[in-house]
Length: 224
Image 1 (cartoon, rainbow, N blue to C red):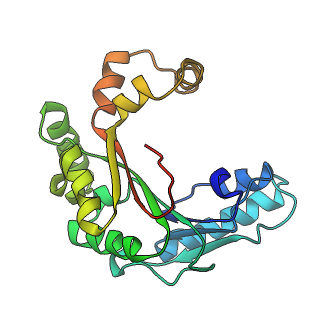
Image 2: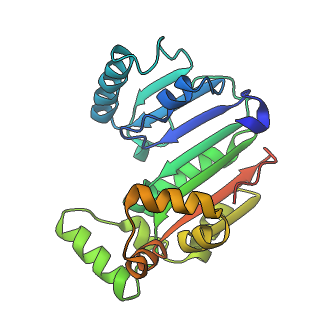
């Protein structure tokens, strides 16, 4: 948003109950348009959460630039509010890991066809070592099928998925690389206090099974 002085659009795919738009509104930081998309039931519950946030005085006025859309993303993207000429950032946090690759491919191709778009994703990957196999098995026992992880198991696969969808600039890094080499010491210390990390070996074993990817078509922004 800083790159475009707020003259941009942000679309959060599979938004869940994230309150980032409220926090931005509180801090007087805003894009031209922010769109949250999730299944209809989640979107309805989220709408109630937004109302509670307003009622409790977390922010003082409704967020006019925020749109909450109930939609099944397996059908592709819905019609998006805001001008298609705005540079648009898509965020997908722990979404594609649960989708069949054909649905992810459809969504990414639609985004890549739009003008001046980029996407940042955060997902699990690396299911084929010992830890990864245990992770897949444990989640399967809870009824969670990680077809997106099995269909895109390596960093190279993650990056290639973006290229095949049509993104001209792509990048992929595992979270251990990001934590070790791209986060300053103060931020690491703050994170350590907040989540009370005391088993660093276990922490490192976990974060090497998560990654962030980035794809860009025309915004000129490089986030990884």
